[in-house]
Image 1: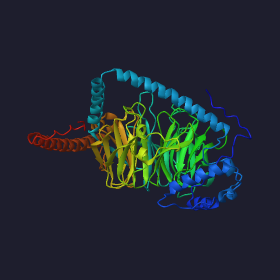
Image 2: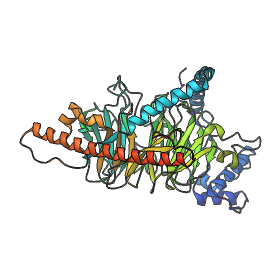
Image 3: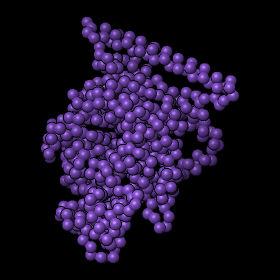
Length: 558
């Protein structure tokens, strides 16, 4: 099936628009003769109440003119907010998403039924063996390279999609100056830097806040989009690495304020998503128009900036996290908000679903300013009652299956291991990263080395490398200790760890000195690991002697 993109004059319906601006919400309630605030009512609940009342007023043709009706321009009338009475093109896209995601759900269900026919003991043993091997490998991870990228702090990083060998070949980073840099792997060598685009209103102080690779363009076609960057002035740029002049393919205004997260649909190449500090997220159809992308959805819902988002592997659900402490779940097949996951007491800076190959592909991890990681099972949220449009607060809170105090300061990034989701990486402004066992939420590795807070982190396609960027203006590449002894790395790496290499008479002497430094550092780390292991063994023996439960092994399994 193909999406019908035929452009017609009547493709846009009027819809029901309800602003999220608090002053306009209050004015709208007054226009309806309703109290602008109820006892104990939160801004999000007030917006929901106004939306229901406006829908009733539109249906009854009451003729009420709302304050925001008088402010709409000709342009904004074609970019309607909300989800009611969608245009024909949007209906076709939703139908396509529904059919595609349903087929994937059926296949996953059939696979789970086949798996259930195996003995539970066999399934658990296989899962434990796989996870133990992965986490044991991760416990040997260390800093491989630390490179300065800019004279200003680095905001984000992203590994390229897997190549034919299943590995990431390049790493993207973006700095406060708006510059985007491409690094080669594994030597962490700068390949090219793209300056801040000047056309279309970009200024000299605009920060590049987010980057995303286009995993649909693995063949790197000449006119295809390789990656996308989002900036603090609300603009987005599409890039192709083979384009001449280090200029973007296209730059357009995406949001009224800062763009903070971008994503491509996992299965439909033409669908592109963004969210920003104008309190909306948007869905674009990149093939509908030859000019600037056509926004199919301009969706409010949060009462503060939308900081992050992530699509479920089926492609039917979208999770958004906001500076209003809320995590919202959206059904792209119907365009409706299906749940508001309440619990965080600070801004939500990262939301991530587990990958489709995970043991439980229905997990959602969220984190932010309250320094905790919350794990949600979206199957446990429950269904709304007949008289409600979404589950009650009690039903939604049941979905939270774990709350972990993870860091001392704001958690800026979460990333699941991409192949099976067996481990979760968290990065924080407390200058550390922690690797967690997803199945038990037990920490298995602490990674420290930055001198200031970490703003972004990512995991390569086959989990061979981790990357982190920080306020200390450096990019760090992390990997297994054995990587540090590879000929390729020793020959091409210009710096190892956080130190610098001194003067040598020949390249051979420099490599030998680097090799010796690595040997000394890894021997020290090995001694520290042995000491911790001995201490753990002594404590376990003491617990067993006292008749207590023996502690879990190093991988966090009970």
